[in-house]
Length: 333
Image (cartoon, rainbow, N blue to C red; front, side):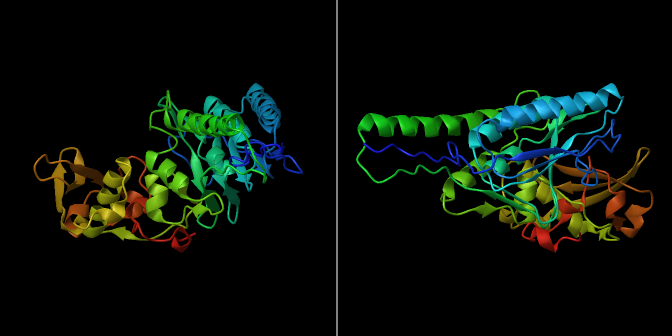
């Protein structure tokens, strides 16, 4: 009887060459950073296809380099740049657990490709915000390629008994369960799961021989991916832009597409001035008064125009106010 050949995202695949981890060096001193910063350079780089044994080998190298930097009082953010077609998903998940444990961010540089198992590793990117806790750190350049697809169960031609097929199926389901457990059931992170349910669904709906790429503002925002670095812009926010930003934030926070809100242009906007300063309030629910409130510079209520760089709402970015249907490669980079 011929052997059953299982390839679940390359689960048991044996690439000709293992992935390579290169230590670049700690060049930042961002010890009090509160949000992912696309300008921070890579401290490590992973290229190639993941093979059995890669996770343990890379984990040792990561721990050694980071502990070495800390012994020199260099406590900046560690960021791994990825460029890989995928490979063994079991190795990617194992290494992803190390990234979450050690608070190591992930980054895709201009033109980088990160697909299949690599995409799941990318989504495990994390960091420790100063005096705030653990958060996600996944930075992607607008021209990078981040791709997901469903598991594949491939067999050689031949007859197999039920027990063999059942074992193969059980292994596939175990790996999928581990993906969900590791990346959806986060523990100790302040900003929720690393992998949203809608992304899991999109991944499973994409045939194994195809690839779903994250290409729009809506997809990146919904799934918690920071896009950048973006070119500084002189764009100003008008009332319509604040409506768009609030609609995006509410939809993405609920793991929904912001493109489905056809009434976003009708939301009520109120400019307020009090002893604390000036704010812009966008009401999304007339019954409850729920909405978004943005702090703006003094005098903005008169002009009703605010430079994007001067809007304060957590860590506000141009992406949050962009058309959700806009392609990422159309952003100013």
